[in-house]
Amino acid sequence: MYRILIVEDDLVIAKSIKNHIISWGYEAECVSDFKNVISKFISYDPQLVLLDISLPFYNGMPNLCNVAIGKQSIFNICGDDFDTLDGSGMRDYIHVSDIADGHIKAMEFLEKIKGTRIYNLGSGKPISVIQLVKSFETVNNIKIPTQITKRRDGDVAISYADISLASSELGWIAKKSIQDMCADSYRAALQACKAD
Image 1 (cartoon, rainbow, N blue to C red):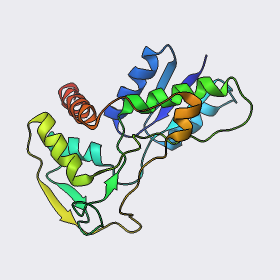
Image 2: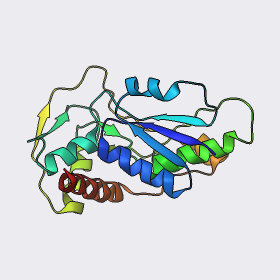
Image 3: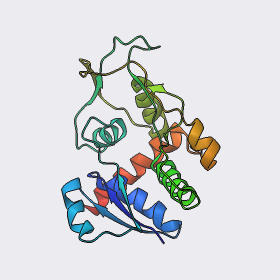
């Protein structure tokens, strides 16, 4: 049986993915950053799978949640001059349970074949940052203070996953909606606040 080591510095995200993986019958453990992984690899273990989802860049949903629960005062929208429907960047947001499910399906598939595969996981449908904020506000009945800041270096107008290989080989597609992600992320952030 595989053991999954999750690398994620956001405790809410890590716990959510860990719980999903455990519910599917796998062992899972979380570490907060990549340097902590070294101690887990004292000897080679072919049953240990590394799931590194720690992101060293701006990540929209955790930042929305931090504003919603008062850890941050304002949500920055990086650029409003992209060639998109509302000027904000369009991205492919995905629920953590869909990420976990995609990794499990990939591991199960790789047990049957030889070689390496690379799969893109996402909804395959971009939405704008402004649409994400509005969805979060509507679903959770909360107002998120925002400000427009300059574009980040290297940002593209639209970025989303081509999920065709994951769909055809793994039978995987994202099942959760943006509304599910907004509601579940906010709920998890509120629970984490109560636990602190």
